[in-house]
Amino acid sequence: MFDHGIDAGDTSVVRSNGLLSSLFRRRQVWLPTLWGWLVLLIFGAAAVVVIASGANGFLAPNEPAVGKDGTGARILVVEGWMHETDLDQAVAAFRRGRYERVVTTGGPVESWGDSHAWKSFAERAASYLKDHGLADVPVVAVPAPASTKERTFISALMVREWAQRSGVGLDVIDLFSASVHARRSRLLYRMALGNSAQVGVLSSWPHDFDPEHWWTTSSGTKLVIGETLSLIWTKCCFWPAAPDSHEERWGIPRSPK
Image (tube, rainbow, N blue to C red; front, side, top):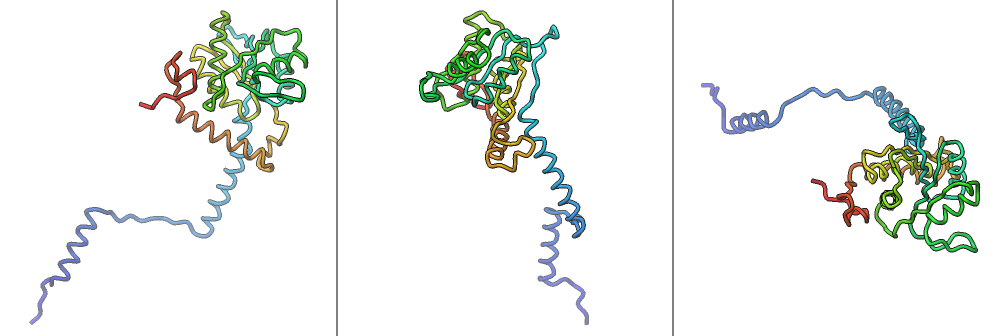
């Protein structure tokens, strides 16, 4: 009189449920309420503020090197492409330290000002430093070849080659760089000079934006965000080629294994 069996439709449902249970598991999920979303938003905004306020300090460190004997660097490497106000700060940094020599770096440049046509940023910076307080100091210009790939890394290689030719030790050096470019420059110099070299870094105070409120100007925003992305790319994607190889000399990264 009554049929308690499972018809064809019910059978398909059972089979479908069985297939789903073999592929998926049911879990309870907690979702924020309106107040929960508000709290998350506040914490997220606070995190952004903290990260933003510390970005400049992270990208522009001032960490002089200390040798194994506890003394500081005697060579100050100055990146020659910097603005005059940055170079003025490099002069002041030299006078504050116990440096004995300055090495300037940089690739080709067409001209600077109205009356000079320098062959390289290295020569331009060397002349500027001598004319603005370092006339009594050995200042050596170490030009780099023209390149569109990792110019800072290639400049570091040129410093390494100059030191080998001149018999100058690079066990402990300090690098003077422009503002938020400093941390990435130090990283590339460490790659070029190897683990045996202690590379410190000094960064200039920017002349065109407030480093503590960099997000309030377009120049500060572009520099900080651009250097952040460049630093991430260098850390994750730039692997220097074998020492003294053609690829290394021209900043061509080796393929990751």
